[in-house]
Image 1 (cartoon, rainbow, N blue to C red):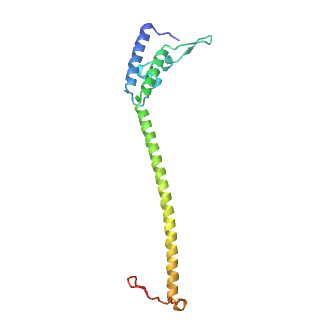
Image 2 (image 1 turned 90 degrees about the vertical axis):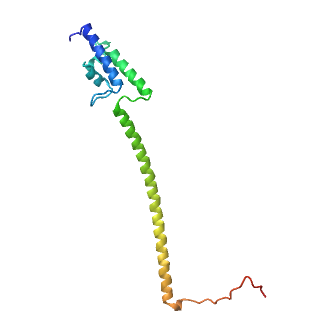
Image 3 (image 1 turned 135 degrees about the vertical axis):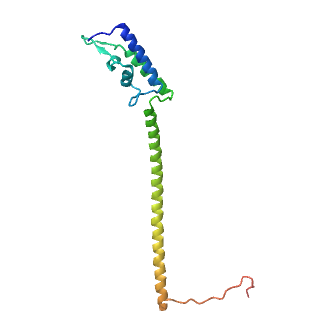
Length: 164
């Protein structure tokens, strides 16, 4: 594999730093994210330069731009810890999760209210049916006067009149 010249490496690092600044400002390309893949694409370098390499003897050495990848991830994490969302999709995801939680809460409240109303409806219908049955029973009783016993009428006591 061919090694790159110091001049090419310096130009690539400059391009990577410019791409880091653009991405961290939120200037993401269409379909891009705030990640190493988009960083490599924006800088015009291969993504493999951001990861450690293996020597022939099995030992690892840092990739040529690994320090820039670590700087990018460190700055991105600092922005996220400060509450700033660089990737508009992440803010959209956060907003949609909040909306989803709100909608779930509203659905739960409405389900509870519906259950209360169904219970009330059942009780009201039961009472109406009982009242209807009682009305029907009384109507039948009126239809057969022999079943009705007339109670003697008591003289009304006038509260203003003294008793004897």
